[in-house]
Image (cartoon, rainbow, N blue to C red; front, top):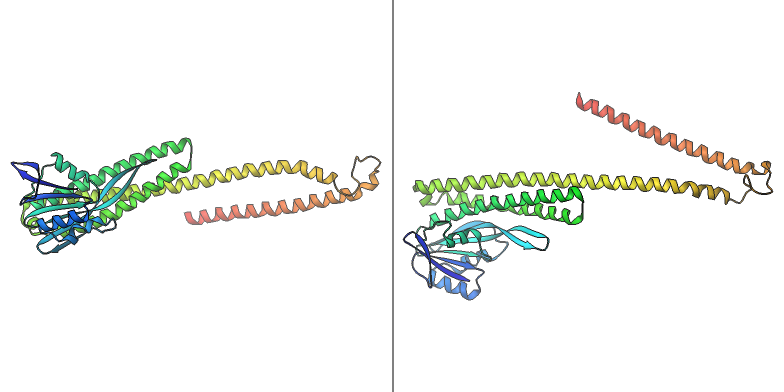
Length: 328
């Protein structure tokens, strides 16, 4: 889809065809649209198609009188289990005749330009780019806040019941923060190159606007790092809780096994191929070997118990000595 816009009397109006100093907004264009826009705008077709690759990295490029800035933008996608967060590249290209923006999906910041929530001037391409990058940095901050709220909601649900679905949602959020962190650092390098543009260097207004972009971008990077560290600690804590719950469950199963082993042991004694006490027609002298087996079993059990207790006590003493050594 290709749309044309032109600033007039402080307002942004949509126009039907290309006009000098206009803005061309391209959302998931096909090959014919890319070829037509390249013909009427003078922008190389390879620049237009740069942002159509989902794996395109954030960068800047100048060629044939055209300057291009590719930045990563946060995208919120709706899913069956809730919203997911990822990034997509968006290219802003300008020359002396027009501004071209290209992305695979609609961008919220550009929608704000179209609806008039954010004032822009298509005849000032550097101001357009700075305004867009400022809005993009704020959009990252908004998405990071949404991720933090979703994380808190999932934690509240996991306090009641710990299911695999909530753990998978936390894992998705952790992956989203990794994508955001990588994209924000890539965008920061593009911002550094933008600061060297002549219009930014010579204009105090543009310099102030660039400082706002840099401030918002650094705040987004710091916020992303904080949220990523918190989520990582949270995932580790839940992993420890799951392991602890598994240990408690295994302890209960062990106790049940021991309890069930007692009647099994008694039944085994009476099932041995030898005379046992209280058996009909068996005298006490005939049950000697039964008591020998019982005595040997008790002695072996006592020896093993003493060894286990000594090993446990030695381990505890070593831990106590290690803690004292660490304190000193």
